[in-house]
Amino acid sequence: MKKKNSILNNIIRTALILILTFLLSLALQYVHIEEHITTLFVFSVFLVSLMTDGYWYGIASAVIGTLMVNYAFTFPYFALNFTIPANLLSAVIMITLALMTSALTTENKRQQSIKAESEKERMRANLLRAVSHDLRTPLTSIYGSSSVLLESGNTMTQTQKEEMLKGICEDSQWLVQMVENLLSITRIDEGKVKIIKTPMVVEELIDSVMVKFSKRYPEFDVELTLPEEIIIVPMDALLIEQVLFNLLENAMIHAQEMTQLSLSVHSTKHEVIFEVADNGCGIEEERMKALFTGTFEPEEGKADTQKHNTGIGLSVCATIIKAHDGKIHAENLKDGGALFRFTLAKEEEQDGQQK
Image (cartoon, helix red, strand yellow):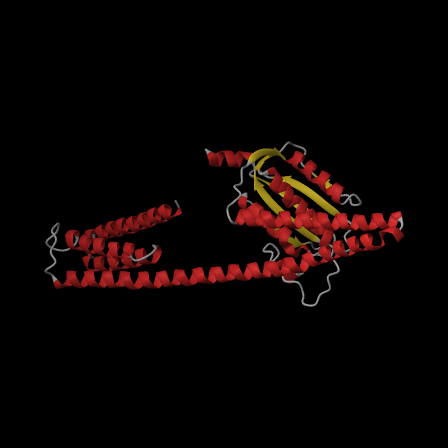
């Protein structure tokens, strides 16, 4: 299907360029500037070769252009005559130009493809290294705590056992969240998950997110600001829940000295804006550049004292929002802390597009 679309696009581009060139040539002939018509067709062959894939479209445009010039714009008009040296020279020049331009364009696209694949491989390597770095901490903690319970559980108090089990539970929950994020971003990037949007009341979505967040972080209250009117947004509710949860959890993990965390929703004529803000330490400029790519590399030699989450959660957020045709953005607040904002189109705009 993709190949058919590519062929169709190439044919349409070739046809449009040749038709436009023919019309411009008629205009030049009308004002008696026929000497520039051949040059115009040579330029059109160059454009076709530059804007299409492979060699055939450029060569075809050179042949068609030669026939057009010979038939419609060379005396005797409306008759093919290849005995004139100038016509033969024009044909040779256009075909040669098509071959050279197509060859350069094809090689350039091949180099770009190689570069893109190399960049993708580099990102995979960085992602794997970062994930390995962050998984080490909870796995080591789970292994250490379970070993102590097995070897010395009989000598420990009930309170000590509960503390260790609580730590194992928290680390296990974090690992599950990490795996879910990795699966989500991989499936969406590879096209294995198709976003099916269904109308969702924003207030119900926020309620669901807060229930999950409260279970994970019962000691922290999130300030909510919601619009008074009922807002309905077409979305995959589970995925958008994951985005909001990831943004809130990201603040809990990274916003050092945070005392306030807020989630607000605003509505404009065409879209709904979701914002998660904290009053913590903000985001380093170096990290801001790769915030939503999941490629930020931990500092060498940095001790594994906490779960960093490698930005995987934010990368998942960006992937999900992009799949919803929305936008996501992060910035540091003037008074301290960070703000994460993403937008989704409202139901009216989606309906208008479908119509």
